[in-house]
Image (cartoon, rainbow, N blue to C red):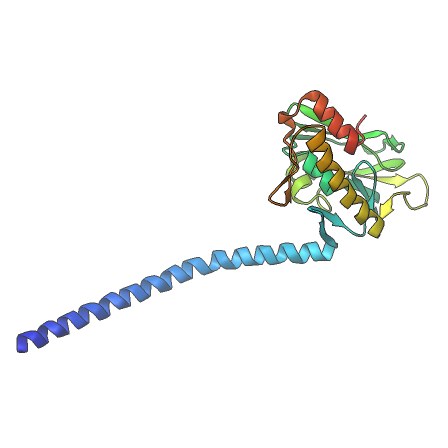
Length: 234
């Protein structure tokens, strides 16, 4: 009997020790796992808060920012007290330019007429000329985009802006804004899907998420047709 009790005590000590080690392991894993989880949550929360602060929302699979003016060539314009009119690409345009490798910006002081080529963006062996949506003199360019083209894709409505101009007049740009811009962008999303499917023979959506074929997969003629139809490239 004494031997049995001794054995049971030893077994109990072993089990308690094993449980203690397991509990310690769980604590260590929790300590190591919580910080990354908190970081991911913080990043996600910051992204949502920033989108809300900028007024960015979804329209038929595309992002749009409600306080901007939009041109037929899928550039946006925003009044900036310090720079005049700031110009960038909207979400449809940036999705047509995946893998942008080089951005050529205009020189400060350049006088642009509406429709003049202001920026050239290269995607591999393909490139597209972006027209100025407004008339004026270039006052600043976003050199950060020239050195880090990913800004066009990561933050097209803010840090990914291209250039700014001092407008030739004080009149507001004759471009779409507000609900008219929202409806137009939604219609453009549909038009692009049909264009890709009927003209290029490729799908524009995968599981509900808007996608566009990579420029290297398109022939030069297909690329020119696509950019001419939606970016008004000359």
